[in-house]
Image (cartoon, rainbow, N blue to C red; front, top):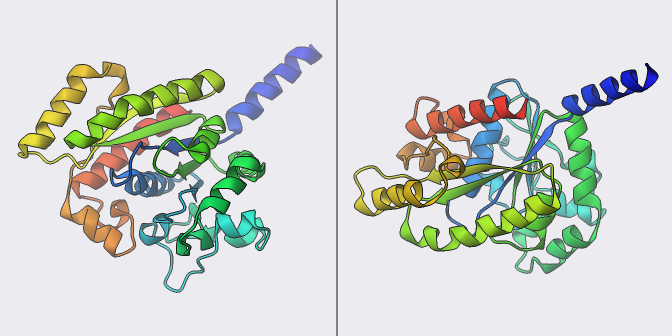
Length: 271
C-alpha cells in the first residue's frame, strides 16, 4: 500500500510540474522570436503562469515582449556572470501571468563567445529550467539560430520543441538538417516531443510562398506539419516595432488568431 501511495504521489507531483517549450530554427529571420514572444503571451492570456527565457545573445525578445518603459536590460548573461541574483533578472510584463528573463548585457556586446561558453559548460541553464518548471505552468525558451551547443543544451532540458519555418524557398534547404538534429535530441532525451513545424510569414497570393506551403505539406510527414499557420500581416511588424506582442496589440489580427489557436492546442497537449 505504501508503495502504491508513493507511486500515486510521485505521478501527481510530476503532473503538476510545468513544461519547457523550446523554439528553434536553423536560421534567423524566420519568425522564431516572434513566435516565442506571442506564444508566451498567448499562454499567459489563458491564465497559465508563463516564463519566457531568451538564450539568444541577439536579445531580440526585449524588443517585443511588452516590457514597461525604462525597464532594466539585465538578464541571463548577468546571472551567468554572478553579477545579478535570479530574482533580479526575472522581469514583469504587461501581462500578470507572464515573466521574462532577457538575454541581458550580452545583447549589447559584439563578442558572444563567453556567454555561449558559460551556458554550454555550466549547470545554470539546467538548474534554471528545472526551478522554473516547479514554479510555472509553461516555460518558453527562445534559442539562438542554428544547431550550436546552446540550442542542444536547451533541447536536452526541454519536453517540447517547435520549429518555425518561414514560407520562402531558402528556408526549405535548412529544414532537413534541423529535423535530423531534433531526432538526435529526442534520442538522447526521451521526455522530448517534437510538436511540429510551424509555417510562418505565409503570404497568400504570393506564388513563391504558396509553393513552399504546398511543398512542405507534400514532402514532410503529415504529423510533423501543424495545421495552424501564421500569415504575414502588417499588424505583426507594427506590434514588434511598438514593443508589444501582436496577440495583445491586435488580438483580432489573423496572425494573432494563429498564435492564440496554437497556444490553445499546445496547452491541451501539455496536460
